[in-house]
Amino acid sequence: MNPFYAKAYENIGIVYGRMGRPHEAETNFRKALQCDPSFLDARANLGTALLMQNKIEGARAEYSAVVLKLLQPTRQHGRL
View 1 (cartoon, one colour):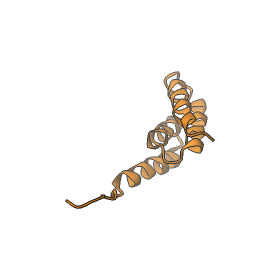
View 2 (cartoon, helix red, strand yellow):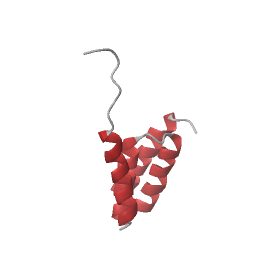
View 3 (cartoon, helix red, strand yellow):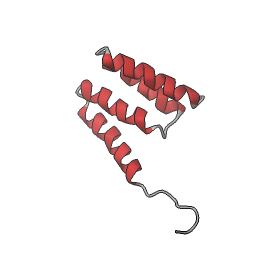
View 4 (cartoon, helix red, strand yellow):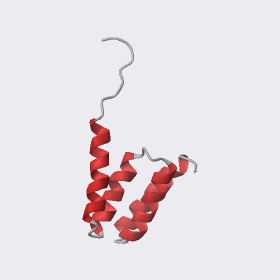
C-alpha cells in the first residue's frame, strides 16, 4: 500500500470518530497502519477508537506501543 494514503485514512477515521462512529473510525485507522505501520498518530487514534468501543485491552496495547516508540532513543549523527 502507498504510505501517502495513510494520512488520508487517518483523516477519514478522525471524521468517523467525531461523528460517533468508532467502528468505522477503527477500520480506517487500521488501514492507515497497513499503509504505514510506524504512523504513531494513527496508532494513538486507533487506541481512542477502541476505547470508545470499550475495547480496553486493545486500546491499552495501542497506547503502550505509542509510548514505547516515543521512549526509544534516537540515533545521533555526528559528535556533540
